[in-house]
Image (cartoon, rainbow, N blue to C red; front, side, top):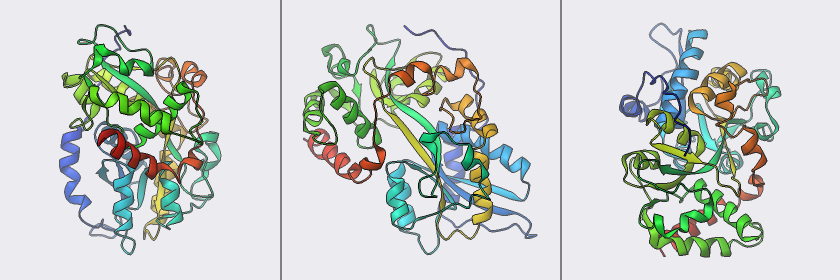
Length: 360
């Protein structure tokens, strides 16, 4: 059983309140200035819930304090597919100035002209990024590094999982939450391919067949409002999710939720921060991007939300680093992934999960 972590100071803005407060803003175009024409308002499209809470408190507020002429409106989204759909529907009048997007989906947005290349003079921190987060062809760099994890309820599970194979254990049958119709499923296919001794670039049928075997044991494919809350409440006892949010919920739940690094290893996932093409506030937007990937912002955000830093100058407290993808243990257990190659297969893989596993 994991050591119960220290309780973290709750963030000032709760996910529910934040979501309610900005829904109206997500339906309207942001103002370019206040009544005096002195304030530029940029819109950031990012993930909802605990991510929004931590990012607002640790990145947006300090940025606004340091740049009183720029305000940031946060528009919460569920996932990268939603971002892609919103941007496709608003090319002439962009729905945001800056947008977060999974690295496996962002290249599609780049190719479609939805994102713009960054100006290195306006984003000097591009030169300070770790290799995994480096800007590709001048487009948006990585903002967060995370990894796939197994989650479990420490009060309801007698035998904690240690392996991906444990998901098939009869003890957990009917107690699983598997929201895998997205990047989590893609990453899980790669992990299962590794276990099965197959090359995911050649054939994913064995991994898909393995997931089909698991399907009858799954209680829910779409836990509400999210998988972390479902595990905390006992709606599900075992689940697949992301390490960073699992670590965050471990703290806020008093140790009820616990993330597990499977013994076979895990898959690193990258979220990119991008300048939306045709933004009329591109200069202010890039200033914000530069701050978000700075060592200062990365340290504050990652110590609150347990992502691994993308800026090589960031120094996390050891007790925090050891719970992120940057830990020595996680680095030693990384399963290699060619996300650039996966870009053209991502949608097809997710469709197979939806049709053959969830709907099979």
